[in-house]
Structures are given as C-alpha cells and as structure tokens.
Image (cartoon, rainbow, N blue to C red; front, side, top):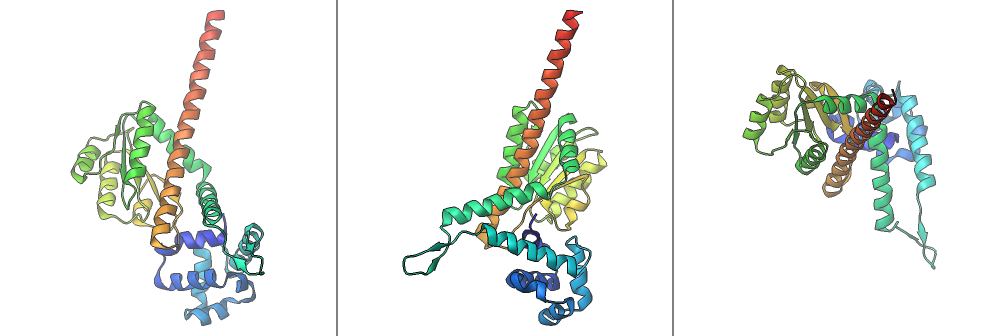
Length: 278
C-alpha cells in the first residue's frame, strides 16, 4: 500500500500535531527525502521526537524509513500519471473519467492490502459458523450494512439489519455464544455503537468491526478488526472513497463465503459418490 495513501487515509483520525506533519509530508512529498527529522520538526513547529513517533505510528522504524517510503510512492505515482498536452504545448489536467478510475483502483488495491489475510479468514469463519448475524452501519454506512445483510440472507443466514437504535439494541440482546455482530463505521467513534459492541461481547457473540485503520475506540474492543480506507479528499469525494472501500470488504467477505460454500458442496458430493461406489 502506498505510503502516501496510508497517510491520507489516517489523517482524519490524527492529533493536531500529527495532522500538521501529515499535511507537510503530503504537500512536499517530492522533497521529503532531502529533509532531516530536525528540519521537518522546525518547519512544522513540533519537536523532533514527534516526527519520529509520527513515523513509528505509521508503521516505520523511524523517519529515515518513512521518507524512503514516501520517495518510493512519489516515484510510483510519477510513473502512473498520464498527462495530456495540447497543440500549443500546455499541459491539461487528467480527464475526470481517468482520474476517477485511477483513484478507485488505488482505493480497491489499498483496501485489499491493508487487511491481513488471517483477519479476513477469521471474519469469514465467524460469519460462516454463526447461528445468527446482526449487521449495523453508522457514519453513512447504513446502505453498505444493508447490502451485506442481503448478501448473507442469500446465503441462508438469519440476519438482523435495522437502522433504528431500539431495534438494534433489542437484536443485540438476543445474541448469544456462536452468534456474530458486524459493525461498520468509518470513524469508529459513535458512542451508541461502542455500547452495543460491549453488550454483544458480554453475550459471548463474536464482533467484527470495519473501521479506519487508525486507532479508534470501536476497533479496539472488537474481536476481529477489518479496515476501510479513509481519505484526505474533499468531503464529497471522501464519502465516495470510504463507501467504496467498505463495499469492497463486504464483497470480499461475501465472495469468500460463497467460495467456501461451493467447496463444501463439492466435497459433500464427492464423498457421496465414494460412498455409493463402496
């Protein structure tokens, strides 16, 4: 996953100083490799240790590793950018259909890479073995949550997926051991979702969260954490990016469940044929 994509995705959940550092890196990405941590600290107005901690929080050993990753991202972006040149020699912006396609491709790729295979499999197994599944979406994720619910119903799963808070609370109260709760929230901050998750965990239900990859209250109390890509784009574009990333994860879970179901059906059919031959 592109280092710059990680920074853009995590920015909204950063502290004030971290946002300053993130903005400086994003705005000066081509030049970052020539900066020292001390120079960046002075330019942004934070301590040198803040720069190092910022780098480590993003998953790098220190600032040196971070700036090498930023430089690599810049080089890759440069090789993928297509620019149009008019007859008089002036450069034109990339057509919206091309830039949107590139952005969508980046989001889908990032959504795939940022999620660990083991976490995806754990989520699939939890849903597969659940006697009942409840799906809740917040922060504009209600449509994505309903889509997941419809997909699970198609697979024969008993599903609860209501947007009304009272119905959600009533549904969670009925969950027990072996059941599953899936919560989808870009921010991972809604207080009512946190209360619902705590209630589900007391009932020994398995809780799966789909939130941004930056530390958030909701994700930290769930059994299985999946991550959607956030964005530093304009509010309208950000909604599109987040929804697209969440939908990609929902589709990934669904396709994995279908694949496992097909394999199970084939294995059952094969065992029956072997039994008849005997």
